[in-house]
Length: 111
Image (cartoon, rainbow, N blue to C red; front, side):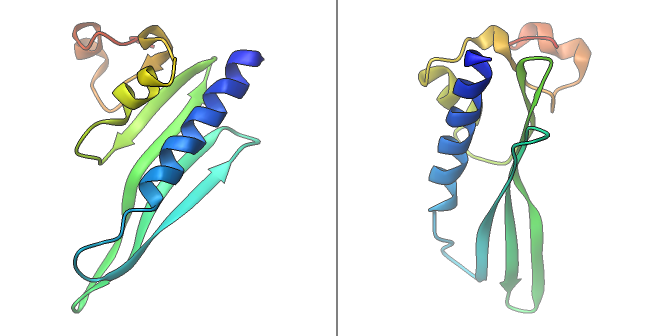
């Protein structure tokens, strides 16, 4: 349970930091969505760029089977390395946006 509490804190820290970035164009905001009961964590962009609707996931992270599953990572830098820098083992992070057959080559957990 101690690891899960640490994972939750690290995920919330990373998502909160990304939510502070201000867009350079358009009128949209970054919204944080934390479902701590089910361990789903998201950063969503919502708004307008001229007459085009902006509505999409920037980050989607789940905790499943005591591992962090990166379902979507729309950042330039990559959140996995930031989580490792916060003390989370690569073997506890699944890059779920990669197909299962390529995960063994990522250096992170397969599942």
